[in-house]
Structure formats: structure tokens, C-alpha cells
Length: 257
Image 1 (cartoon, rainbow, N blue to C red):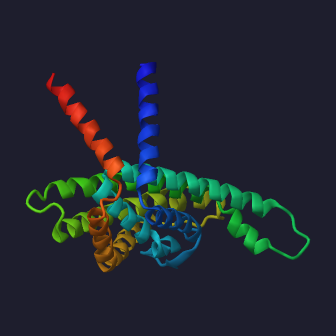
Image 2: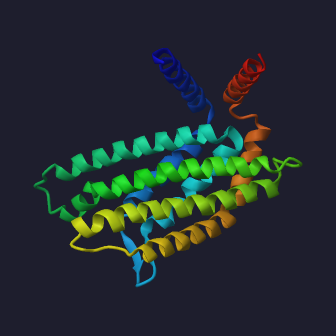
Image 3: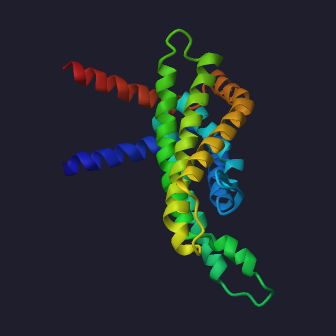
């Protein structure tokens, strides 16, 4: 068992190293920036009524899901999950740096408001991290599964938009709902003087947010489709694709023995 775990860790490190050499830096950069921005914007509730509530994270979360859809389409769900974990880790490191900056005293002025933003709230960070990682796995594997259903033209425009629309809506709904339940139903009533969302608000927020993100995906998906086509035309990431293809072939050969 120990040897299997060591082999799995070594294999994961090798695959991750190859992936990071092959995946375009712009896609990773936009992905990481969107995840960090979501964490900051989630601190602000934009709208709250008796039946609906929205936080600022919906303004940028569409970008992270579009990046995941593009990466999943070209490199596969495992690669997209790997980049999602990387983005979450960088986000946690950034939050740590922000927190350290917020507690360093200054005699140059009153930075109370800035410190409160940089310091963040631990349960918002917890909720956003859990929600993001769970929804990323759901989005990526659902995107891949829907794409497999298109046997006639799997790389066509119809296949791409169907994959992105279905996975984005369901993934965003799960992301919003998990975050809202953890933060605004679980921790906020205790740490924010009784402020909370009801379950109906959490559900309607999740549905409204998912719908808004879907509309943005509809608007921006042509860009994602062109990116995938451009990567394919330039044979981007051939080392990683060949490595994963060889690994799949090896598994198939072992299964036949």
C-alpha cells in the first residue's frame, strides 16, 4: 500500500510538472486571478431581499468557469482539476500575505478599512475554497461527460457550447449554494451579529447567480471555442497529451492481460 501511494504521488508530480510546462500561461494566469478576485468580492453582498441575495463574486466567477471549460475541453478534466487545486493553493497563500499585511501597524495613516478588506474573514475563505473545489470537480467531469455524448462531431461548436452551458449552470449552482449555506447560514449568524440568509435566499441566490453566469458564458463562449481551436491548430501541449495518451494505452494493455 505504501509503495502504491509513493508511486501515485510520484506520478502526480510528473504529470503536474508536464502540464505546467505545456498549458498556456495566459489561461492559468486568468484562472488564478479570477479565483483570488472571487474570494475578495464574496465579502460584499450586492443585493438582499426576503427571497434573493447576491454577493459580489458573481461578477468574476464566470471567468474561472470559462477557463476550466477550455482546459477541460483540450487537456481533459484531470488537468483542469489540477489547475483548480493550484489556483486554490495560490489563493490561500495570497490571503495569508494579505492577512500579514493587515496586522502590520502603520504610523503613516489610518488603514482600518483597508486592513479589514485585506484581513478578510476566515469562514468566507473556508466557504469559498470548499465551494470552489467541489464545484470545479463537478463542472470538469460533467463537461467531459457531456462532450463524450457527441460521437459524430466532438470538436464542433455545438458540442462545445452544450458542454459549457450544462456544466457551467450546474457547477455554478453548486458553487453558489455550497458557499451560501456554509457562510451565510452556518457562520454568519454566529460571527456577524445575527446577519444571515435563509435557505430560500441561498437557493434563489444560487439559481440567480448560475443563470447570470450562464448568460455570461453564452456571451463569452465563442472566445473559449476559438481558443480551443487555436490551441489545436498550433498543437499546444503535445508533450502532456502524448503522456496521457501513453498512460491510457498502458492501462488498456494491462486490462487485457
